[in-house]
Length: 385
Image (cartoon, rainbow, N blue to C red; front, side):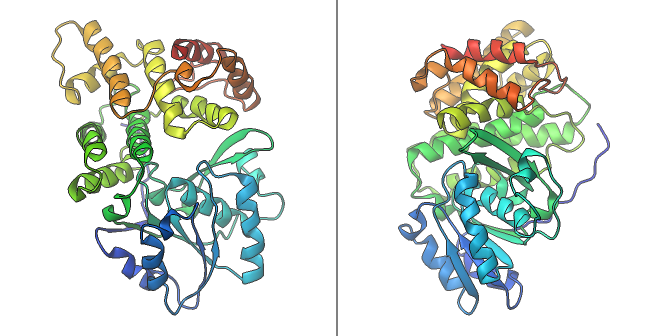
């Protein structure tokens, strides 16, 4: 196990009715920016709960943050932040809204073009503090410092991360997920699953605690994800999925172990170019990446098969192959298609993706840095049909 430093600053308020407690977590005399997405929170009661909790607190609103939040949309909020004297951001929604809040927090006092925070990893200081009310369990953004933003003008989807933009609190009320559309239940489960895989499916470094936590989260998602599709209003099921998604990317399981975010890096280009949902791109890329990198990941794929899927093949080769197939089958069970062709894209789309990978400097992906542009192209060709 490698050396690491770990601190998670986010206070989790988990369960029914916890939104009522947020006022005590917001600094006295703060001017709050309440930001959210397309307005679904006004239909399911979440907005009313939040507004009630903010009684006596001065706030302004910013809505319209889209899935895969765009630089163009988020940039409009900087004017509100400046004109209204905003000094706290409350993000109400899923990972896209929370990611957007982190970008606004980092850019609020940034001198220059805020896009440089993503494009050039420019340093920023004095970010605004953030709180979150989660409505879509998927990304884990509510308890980490990572953010991904898309710039439509250049078809770039880029990330940045810093502990200073991690939410200081997050409300996780499973009842807020009862009205999610089937597609978002499916996407959220797949997203969380792949987050775990990217921190787990590399090579052994004698990290039984992290491996055990990761395997527990994966088993929970495999068991509870399909149940959430069948019965969206089962509180216990939704609670387990919600907590699994948070635990998948709050930093704990990734400490002291190698990580591989190649699936995400390749997948981001599919979203930026063609508008595919983030989880859809992960479901496309991961099974083929596992097949292409089978030898490099052999021991951990074998462990995944035995500990999570409970396969008992004597042949290690058969065990590994069945584990890869089972991973792809789980995505399909969650109603997320796993081939590029499933989304109506021509094979020529691969060339467009490759051009973007090159433009964004994705030359050495994977835990060994051995996923070159040529290897990425092979992965995408395997994933086509």
